[in-house]
Structure formats: C-alpha cells, structure tokens
Length: 372
Image (tube, rainbow, N blue to C red; front, side, top):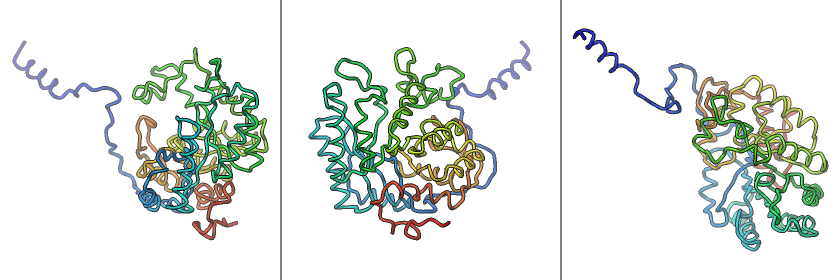
C-alpha cells in the first residue's frame, strides 16, 4: 500500500462519525426561527389532571408558589385515596388531602376520590361502593378518578379480569350522575404499546426506555376492546359526566375523537400527556380545538412545573419546530397552535368552571364569565 493511500485512509477514518446508537442521535437544529418563551399561562387555568401523592403532609405553600408562577389558579389532585393499604388508610389519606388544602391553601385545590375493587364478587358490592363514593363527596371530594388498572389489571377473587364496563360497577356511575360530580376515567394506553416492537412502531424509543409498557395482545385485552368497554359505560350512563382522560388516547386521530364527542354528549376530554400529538398537527389541532372548544379541559398529569412551559408555548404561540420536553414521547418537533383568546379561556378555565361550581370565580378574569 502506498504512503499516499495509507494517509488517505487514515484521514477518512479520523473524519468518520463515531459509532452511536440510533436513539443517541439528536443534533440541535440549525433552523433559525422566532422563539417565544412562555413560562406563565396567558390566563389563570385549572389543571384537571394532576397527582399529589403525598398531599396530606406536603408543605402546600411551596406547591402554591409554583402554581402562582405558572398562573395556575386551581389544581385537581386525582389521587385522594392511596393506591395501596387498608380501607382505613385510604380514607385517612383522602381526608388528609382535604384537610391540608382547606387549612393551608383554601380554594386552590380540588381532590378526587378513587375506587377499591376488593370484594367485587360479593352481593351488593356496587351499592356499597357507591355509598362510599357518596360519603367521600359529602366529605369534600370533587369527583371520582378511575385508573387504567380497571380493565387491564384488576381481577376478582376467581382471577377473572374486571372489565371497564362490568355491570357490578353500574351503581357507582349512576350515583356520580345523581350527585352531579364528574368521573375522570383513564382507560388503556397508547395503541402502539400493543403493536409489534419493530421499525414500524412509532413508540419504539419509548418502549426501549420503558419496556414494561409493552402490551401482549395474546394475553391482555386489546386496545380496541378496552376503548369499546369504556364507550359502553358512556352509553349506559348518559346522566353521568365523564372526563375521558388523555383525549381517550385518540389525539393522534382527532376525527375519531370528534366522533366520540359527537356520539356521547355526556363526555368531555382533557389534554394531559398528549400535547405532543397536537403540536405536530398545528392546523388540524387548531381547527379541532376550535370546533370542540366547549368539550376540552386543560390537564397535564405529572407535576413537573417547568414542563408546563411547553404546553403554554404550543397552545398560545405560532412558533415553529421546537422540542417537546420528553423525547421518548415525541420523536418529532412541535409547532404552536396560536389558539384564539376565547378558545384559550375555555380550555384554561371556562369549561372547568361548568363542572366544578365550588371553584372561586374571583380567581379568573371577569369573575369567570366568558365574552360572547
């Protein structure tokens, strides 16, 4: 080999890119576009999807200071009862949430109760559970949150899966309708979690980082079955208001979610953990949120204050091509929707005020009254 050829090969090797994994490739964009930093919402807002797991003992002054910085007027803590523990411990957790908020942050928090399915095979279970939910509402709970474990992991004493539309739960849904309190229900996970984990799966990166999120269609109910069960509940209980969590996992197919809202007038939805779907289809999302402006609430899910900034930027600005805050949820860029003031006000607080009459209207512009 000649000296000249050897030198050329060495130079080529030196200039070749270092070996890296595909998911490590994340170059900063060279695109130069306007950047709007939005750290506080344009209007005070109600976050209807939040979790404060240690709220009975939290220093709420710290949380409220963070809320004020975001312009969050009211937070809905969906985790009133602990996941585990005895009935007495769960009840104590709920009452601790309510008391801490009442004493140390009056008017700033609403708390939802939750269900325990222990004993579902026993006669009269549904009525007893409905009575317990009513007692929690009488104590100050503002609604009922259903976790995705219903339909996916909950079984009865015989080991049989409890479906989302199990008729033994009908008394609970009916009682919530009678009490005029909303049921925020989370069913299933994103559909790609059931699909093959290969180069055709849009959630490939997320499933690599979080392999426990993979679903086995051979042993678990399918996405389609779970969503159908949820919709059966909506249909059977038209007098109950349901908040379909996470846009019913249909934010990637807004036409389909629109059909759900058209079919079930007792259903509203919220945008928690699906902002990335809106941010990649700004024109379609703008039109959809304008059309369904009376049916969508603001929600975030995990309490990480700085992540709200991306929500504000997507909803309020017309910025182009910017990052979402968690790459495994969005292997793509965001675009601002530039929503109108009226749509923003309904999304941020107007629609929530209709569901929660206990919220102090003085926290919002014009006492919460929206312009015509």
